[in-house]
Length: 327
Figure 1 (cartoon, rainbow, N blue to C red):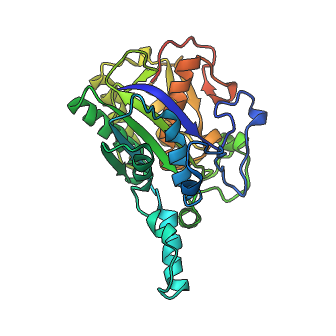
Figure 2 (spheres, rainbow, N blue to C red):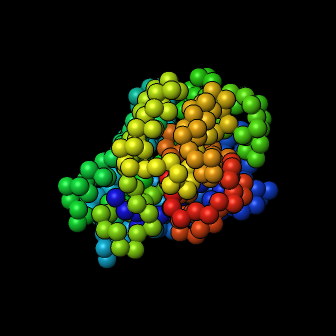
Figure 3 (cartoon, rainbow, N blue to C red):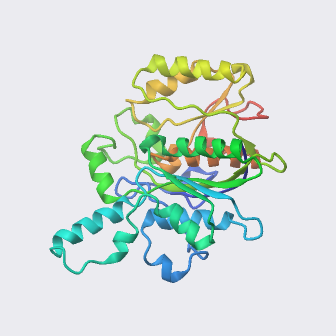
């Protein structure tokens, strides 16, 4: 599968800000997305949208070409319109099932982002949303690959979107997912404490089976759900062998490390399989942690391939190595 167009909304005004001193820091322990003016969304529609819907639609519309429309829309989101659903349920209690605002109800379904995109762009093709928590975007990628295997002449809009909704933030806080202390994202990897910084954002891609003028190629994808560090390491080794990828040939490893000491052993175990001079990057000090953060990780990979430039603060090790490809 080849990637041809990319766009994102993140907590950074410039997602690849070169100077770490200029990056946006957390507000109330949250890395909140910097939203644009959404010029592509009709004002009457925009004012009824929740944040995740605005971000998803606002990220996708600049990529949709009216002359060469995509054949389908595939979105991954752990929560999608959940915040609007909670607001509607609260209204039911507050108004004793009386005169309720229909807007929250209409925007509360899980497929609302893909649905709104289909309506606004008049796209009547394949339209689906994957809501599988931390594997939502990965399943969307697998779906896109399957669709292209079946319909190689088609192209698809692929994306991952999630917001920091009050409901989800409170649940995850009670679950101990986030840092208890106030900390700058510039120092997140040196914190040595459990928990991460919550973030949010959206990343969209136009994908097809045509390699002409492509930014990048996704050669293979695999998911695993386990708390066994050794099993993760073994599966990564098998993944590399299955795809005929020698660790000596890997130029760049983009890690999902997020400053949480509880998950750090998983990333370190993966790094042991790499060649000693393989470059390792970290990006979650820019966007924070959320279920579909891997989507913006893919955006970073594509942007780096396009520009061949990497801000110094993304490097974990081997900043000077020459890079011709990416993993």
